[in-house]
Length: 136
Image 1 (cartoon, rainbow, N blue to C red):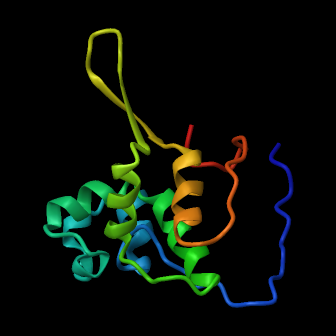
Image 2 (cartoon, rainbow, N blue to C red):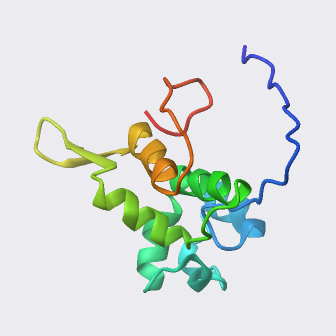
Image 3 (cartoon, one colour):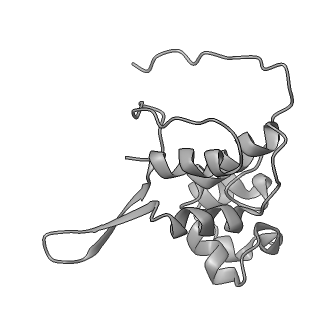
């Protein structure tokens, strides 16, 4: 049984940014298998190619959250790909090797996501995972 979700009302607007450029396609892409390369708005992500966009569309929940937080606090509005590249420059996306030496994507490190927010001039602290995290 999952715990109840607690709704918190904030005294300011929080912009919504999905990890895909067309939020209306989220169900089709993530649940129904639509190829993200078919997203007609893919260039809005800041990706240089549709392949770059498709790759990160499945892996950008952390940077999308950073973009929302920084946007809500009045910080610089960077593209999703800019946040991804900034996180990558900090070594924030973890890929490990399995027993056979094959790459296994673990995901975004919380400390890196917090560092991205701090680099935008705001306070942030990485917290332990919960049942609702998309990261391990």
